[in-house]
Image (cartoon, rainbow, N blue to C red):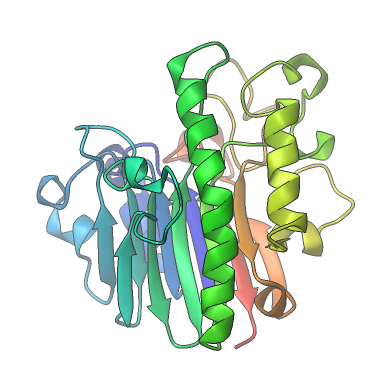
Length: 271
């Protein structure tokens, strides 16, 4: 089995003080993908940035204290790539030092950690998100083709910052004009599934449920009321998705036990 977990840690240094270290020590995952790390390796305690028993890849943002993705794997990666420029995709190089994408090759599979920009309607942040999306879709298509030629599968894990369908957020009616649930964003995610032919693995295993949500605002009683969003995905090539046997969100038992505003999303694949 191959167990892959993805989680936005909302600042790894803060998460480490709240329970991430204990969670990592207890997980059965073979690969852990982190987003919004918001720290360089030198800023992380050794047991967090380079814990025993794990091979780690860190891709911090050039802008201090922002974004940042990491991958922790039990096996040493065969190949590491930071960013998604250098493959002939227009606009991709803009994000090479943004701390938003990294991928590793393990035997038979490429695993990526993605932190897609969150956006805000009517601001430069939304423009940045749209530029990222425009570059990332053709990259995903090319990644799948290159992997297939090499006999590999692909899974892109992370915080995609888009709820795809009404079942993916509790209060969808109130958020129809909010970044993260805009028609153009949802249509783009449909293109990831249809044109690029990736599979939303969690939804494929849980087709008829609300959620399962993976992010809850710290405001109000969103967590207690399960008023969340499903924006953290594992998007896999069909061959790998077809080998997924179990998927779940590791939701904390209580608000006080959370170490991030996101919860880990875990999938078990047959090798």
